[in-house]
Amino acid sequence: MAHLLLYNADMKMQHTLKDIIEFSGIGLHTGQPVNVRITPSGPDTGIRFYRKDLPGSPCIKAVSANVISTSYATTIGVKGASVSTIEHLMAAFYGMGVDNANVEIDGPEVPIMDGSAVDFIGMIESSGLMALPALRQYLVIKKPIRVSEDDKYIFLLPPDDMEFTIDYSIDFAHPFLNKQSFARLFSQDVFRKELGSARTFGFLKDVETLRANGLARGGSLENAIVISDTEILNEGGLRYPDEFVRHKVLDMMGDIALVGAPVIGQLIAYRSGHSLNHKLAQKVLDKPGRWELTDSLADKDVMSSMPALLEKLATI
Ligand SMILES: [Zn+2]
Image (cartoon, rainbow, N blue to C red; front, side):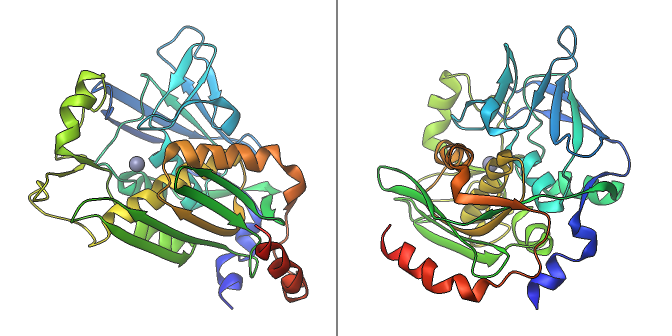
């Protein structure tokens, strides 16, 4: 059975990195060069960013409560110290099963690398993971949670089985993007092979406006798919025909990671983005009656809960 493969005994334990990871790059929005050093950390510490360039190296924990902006990227901050565009790195931690790590950074934005999470995934794989002497806590959805904004929405429903499934759709008024959907049972393998290398994207017509607003200063064809009205400007074209929706799922992974525990449930999203993703993470945390934490994904009699679940779905 799939879930036995996904959640083997090793996945019961919390993990950190085995080795230190170091890399440099520029921020997508600031255009600033940044150096990052990621070090292993202990059980139940989560992902913590440290601004090494600021006095006292302030710590900003990567949790939903510390999100201060969701405009074009997810930014966390505490007392004036912030780190932006954390979502692709957070997605890599979440997707690869890194529960705890310290991210030391000497600037205000995580390097964009090639616009995807592929470099982060490669570095996590090179480091390898180390199991910690503490059980991982999974957040299992028990009652539906819904957020919406205009016609955009996300549902987080109780799982059919003790797994995390994603069904994500985008619908842009553009010939290359219009309708794309991505529906999978989430696993580390799906994350690595099908989501990790999907790049961020933007429209050529928006570039000037973004730059006038101090955004996308580091953006280029090296780190984003750029789309004009008639073509994709990147020489190599797309990595997947539906790279756009895959990147949106990658962003979602990075944003849902901020609830602080791997989620078990069915996530259904339509035209979502960082702002709505953040609303979802906040609502999850604001509604502790709708989920429970468990360190065991086995021995759940899920079939017995199906009639009750169907009844609930009919009412939302
Ligand atoms: Zn992104």
